Image (cartoon, rainbow, N blue to C red; front, side, top):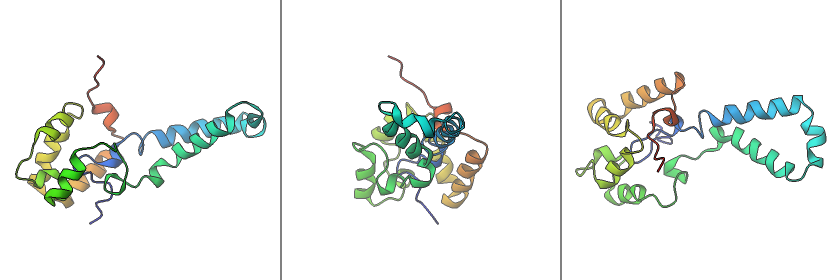
Length: 150
């Protein structure tokens, strides 16, 4: 079973905009700009080469993201080291689930706790299939995440 895109907290990396939506949008912008001649005259503009390289990097995001377990995500995450210390594959396996760290994250990701409960109920294989079904439907955490606008 490939857990590359399963985060310790119980999110699924392929539902992140950086893997799902942003690469397609960056690619569309690159193609439009190429069609409009930016590949030819863009380099004469200040900052263009860095911008162009950044767009190319964003476009490759779905292919280059290492996933949470291999270095992607917030460097100050308190969940990743805790899960490793407790030797759990995912937090829903932990006896203390949901802890204060998960509950805090769930305030931004309203599906986190229900997804954790579903994982506990059906097991990892079926849970992964459910997450991949979301990906195929075009779901993205940006669409289902609470935002703090204060």
